[in-house]
Amino acid sequence: MIGPALPRQVKLFGAVSLLNDFASEMVYPLLPAFVTGVLGGGAVALGALDGAADAAAALVKLVAGRLADRPSRRGPLIVIGYFVAAAVRPIIAVTAAAWQVVGLRVVDRLGKGLRTPPRDALIADVTPEAIRGRAFGLQARARSCWCRHRTVGGVGAAEPARGRAHGDPREHRPGRVRAAAGDLGGAG
Picture 1 (cartoon, rainbow, N blue to C red):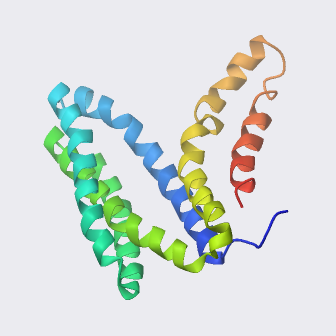
Picture 2 (spheres, one colour; picture 1 turned 90 degrees about the horizontal axis):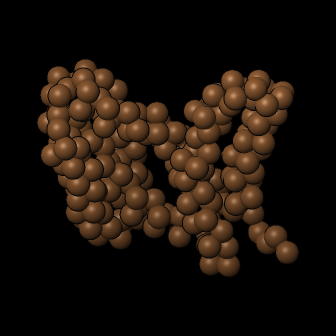
């Protein structure tokens, strides 16, 4: 039995999460090379990059969770959280020092910490209890779909070269695309 459909808000948040993580995965895997190679930062800068960012997100989640207890504050917190992340990522390209990248990454994670608790509270509010697990499952799949299947665009783009040596260059790509599409389709 499939059960009732997921609420529209849950599907929209899933799409926004997917696109937001797609944008993150286009920028953040390059940061270690950018910080060490271009900006001349060392191991301390790389450690500070993720350590400070994760700590900031965790601390802000505490405050945002408290604020999310009031339904009227959820929408603005979610919008501000996604806006901060979207606004900060392009600025990383014009940084001139490793500490600037660390600071911008921290601000990006502050946005994540700000949006996550109110988004989850809103999803819980609009979803019937019987399908709440499916709703949060869709969110988790949307957040991780691109990360697990970045081969669609990344390694998948290199597969035709490998495929030429082993047969048809298109033989690998359709399976990757179907896997990524099925990841989201199976959760909804």
